[in-house]
Amino acid sequence: MTKEVIVVGAGLAGSEAAYQLAKRGIKVKLYEMKSKKKTEAHKTEKFGELVCSNSLGADNLANASGLMKEELRRMDSLLIKIADKHRVPAGQALAVDREGFSEDITKSLKAMENIEIIEEELVEIPKDKIVLIASGPLTSHGLSQKIGELTHTDYLYFYDAAAPIVTFESINMDIAYRQSRYGKGDGEYINCPMNKEEYYNFYNALVSAERVPLKAFEEEKIFDACMPVERIAMTGEKTLVFGPLKPKGLTNPKTDKMDYAVVQLRQDDKDGRLYNLVGFQTNLKWGEQKRIFSMIPGLENADFVRYGVMHRNTFINSTELLDKTLKLKNSENIYFGGQITGSEGYVSSIATGMMAAINIAHKLEGKAPLILDDRSAIGAMVKYITEEKKNFQPMGPNFGIIRGLDGERIRDKKERYMRISQIALDYLDSKLGEI
Image (cartoon, rainbow, N blue to C red; front, side, top):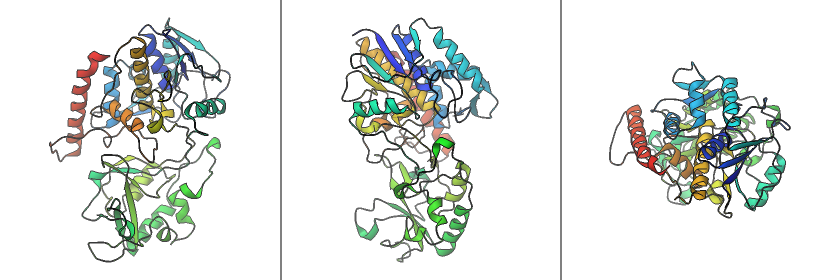
């Protein structure tokens, strides 16, 4: 097989992937259509353009995003190197000068001898070449159709609203209780009970909370199955009690009575470390979500690893379609990286773009695949998007998906996360010889 790879999209994932391949002596044809056809969100023709924010998140090891960035530094990430160079003051976060960041990425890739830039939209996916699709959450309609044909699905996954997720260890089980409605099942749900006063305090805060203004291309198209909880509440003060917060079929074992309202949490991962708030798809601002959802009894100290979001997004059902090298299971030469895989956020995009590229390089060089396990933040993200699950939704780096401490108990959360990060980095260092 010729050592040539087509990379689709020069966003964060595609730019990182192109660099990782080119530095290994592999020729790259990098397709980027922005000079001729922009998406609704992009403003410039530069590569690695940051759209929503200039922040790449926390940059300390007590934060999973900070851990992932440190892992990327140790794996020679071009984009994190450029981000560090263009850092602007932002406390403990890694924020960058947006224009300088994108311009530096563009210049760096254009200067690499193994990279050919093709300023066109890729409308046909070649079957006889290795292709890495990193076209992002705003993939063009034409390419979306071709991906649908490749994956044997009629559509990619679009969602209008997604619910917040909290860690199990942060749920106050002295207040909450396990029980399935009407005694059916094995108590899979965790229930947070509310009395009448608690419910109305919560309700009044919810209906008056600030929501995220939608962009023109994110027009609100609300379906019954994913109507934001605040919109449900606005239809009547008791609507939630007869909807997602209905207490029917539940008896609080602490009082032997039915509560006035109940918020249910459902397990979101295989290991039971993450739980989502059932029926709590929302478009509230993140600060408002933290304030209001912490009013729910049992969630007063909840650790939110993902807040609810509502926007247009495009991603494949990676948990069914991709293997652990980020290759399409039904193809020998199609790989995916970036947000189209369901890896949420800037840093995860860089990480999955890098991992797909490294595994392509290893395949071309006859080396064993590089599979990082969930001791590392990068490995945990790849595991999350490739391990089969019933209700797959995008997620960014968080300690809920990274392997915890085996038998080692550290009560202080910051110290515990620092210890997990140190284990992750020691593990990664032991794997660097494979790269």
